[in-house]
Length: 424
Figure 1 (cartoon, rainbow, N blue to C red):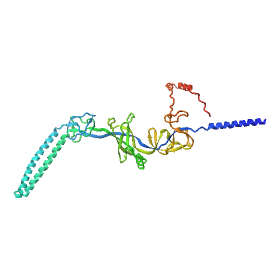
Figure 2 (cartoon, rainbow, N blue to C red):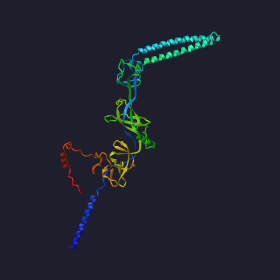
Figure 3 (cartoon, rainbow, N blue to C red):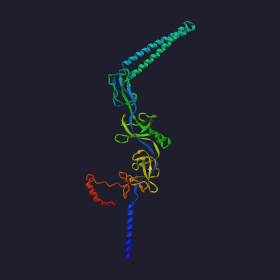
Figure 4 (tube, helix red, strand yellow):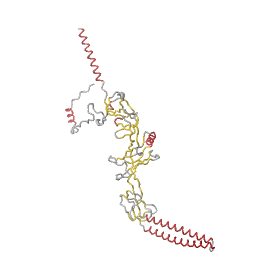
């Protein structure tokens, strides 16, 4: 009787041990599978998203430079004009009369000079024989010099009168787009002040005026001095404008001016870029958003947006170490480039940065790393389910399933086996 009881007890003990082992195996899940990328140090463009305002490359006010009555507008408002093209006509009659008067005074001065010169020559020829006194010779020569000065003065008056007569035709000082007429025909212009008639703006190229905070400019220049940031290969910083519909403008601009002082009202530094506008699609005065490439960042890393986490300490990424365990690394970022963060510190080349499955890992716990496949990741950046082929896209739901949830549920029930109840 005792032997069977011992056999029964031994059998129960073995069964309990097997049950305990099986339960322990069920309670120890395998390490989660995560999608990772290998961090690679690169030389990347240092980009900034900015907003600026367009202004003409040159803008010239066309003004009346002589007094007179405006007779006619010659140009077409809103059309392109050339440098030196006549835009307005001012009544030239008073100006022509002034020129005639100056020419008459010049003729009189020239005649006086001829007589004075003849008298001076006669006195100088008679002086050696003592036929005239020294004082008479001096007086004759003084009259000659005064007459010569009067001729010069009269010639200047004639030149001035000719210039004023030329101003009766108001021309464009530059080539560009002529604006609206500011004064109508028949108005008296240039009387007491220089009357504005219109404005001509050069639209190709355009200026893009923008600003950056003084702190950001200081950091950028400090980084350039330390060698971690360098200018682009051509030594110039560029800007790429985006149009209102989101498309990229086809002509890149070039930074050509940076203020040497900080605006005390805004704490910002004024910058300017030159933007080609051959088709004149862009107009002065409008705001544009653009991406400015201010140099090249050396030894930087690009990590996908979903891999970066933040807490009260700052930004960090989770990395699968060489021992297969997860390590937290605090990082320093310098803005966003497309779908990636530009990381300038905190990670090393070769680090396996977790992109998909960040929510499933814990610092110090093991994780199974697999190359991250963006095409197979879902909208939340999670890794594809185990057993799914790499790069396989999720099956699309039937078109009528979205409209009828009950029908969708029914199709799912028919097409897949019932899920097992969750084990506690």
